[in-house]
Length: 534
Ligand code: NA7
Image 1 (tube, helix red, strand yellow):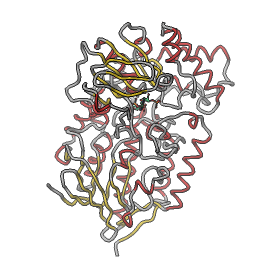
Image 2 (tube, rainbow, N blue to C red; image 1 turned 180 degrees about the horizontal axis):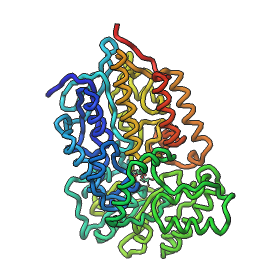
Image 3 (cartoon, rainbow, N blue to C red; image 1 turned 90 degrees about the vertical axis):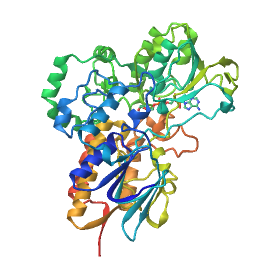
């Protein structure tokens, strides 16, 4: 058991926590990171499932704050695999000598603000009690895993894996009958890989997802050299986009475009692969007609790939707009269902009944299994925060303050919780952006704020209730004008029974968001109350 008094306590050692520690040190602050895993990496530490890789271009999905690290690191593929990204974060932690201030294998259980002394006390499952002037939640948007509630699941004799808590040494499915539940990004990446190894694979699908080809490739040397020669300019450009990624953004709506060009453009983007596909027209997520055209294009492609008519019918996404659940990026996903050893079960027509010691039973069938993989997602964005007993002023629990949905100011701070900062929190662009770019922004904003506080004798900073309400309304109004409300996505908490249906990310764009945060800081942290020591 050990404690300690620090300036900054950071929860989580993923991309956010690692940089926050470095930033805190650069400001001359004492800091400690508490991390549940045995190593740095966060999402990329836990998600070791076969096929796990990023869906953002790897030269963009990386830190920009250190020119040497940026120059030295060699990315090998367009969409880096999990092990390469984990290797990168480990490299950064070593290169910047960060490990000595990270406590691994330790889970934060509670964080309580003491208003009399303006300090946070953070408690862990190891029995530690640490205090800090500032507490930074670098807990990640997708870290609180969710298992399906299936009757008798505990009776199943085989192993059950969640993609977000994959065993360290990997899993060998050779010769096994495997079931996969879930066809979101994780399932869609894992299914083709598991199908190649298992003797038989049964995919249990609740909602068919839209997926476009990744067209991943190994970087030729001159590609990287060219990119690195203009890295700083590219980083600036990326920050000035809606999503923090250098996509090829179309400039007009579907209606404004020439009919022949539209189809050629979609084809070009389909061939190019990746998320670029969603950005051909400016109104894809606002105009139902445009959205239908894009969805029809993808449905035509799926129909061309999947041979069996019954499977084709089941796998076809029909009843929600494309992009309103996160668009998946795949390698051979649809073609995998042409394999003889793969079967698709449509849970909408035959829901789960129960599990036996050796099989999954639905309302109409029984599927013998040796192993079960749950690619069933997360209690996203708020789950990892609500899992910690965070108590602000007067002992109020954050999860109670958020009972009707998360309320933040700029996604970074919460009224009633002084000196608590959230990285990529609800109400910020978070999962609607290049996460690393948004993380860097948030960390820099937090680091600058703390430096400002110390330079001005400010001991507490706390979001104003009215400023927070205005921000919450602004975030909600941005979502109201879109098609996002028409899908049962984790963006609105629809995947967790009982979770309030609130659209959580900020849709106004990374460029606009960062400008607003800058403006708040430049105006002496407008919308915050500051307290000074008496
Ligand atoms: P997602 O995108 O939340 O996908 C989870 C999948 O699991 C999805 O197909 C769900 O169906 C399905 N699911 C969840 N619970 C159940 C139950 N109880 N029964 C049947 N099917 C279920 O999580 P991922 O890990 O794939 O991706 C998360 C993000 O990580 C991703 O967007 C990237 O940003 C990286 P549903 O669609 O809810 O009907």
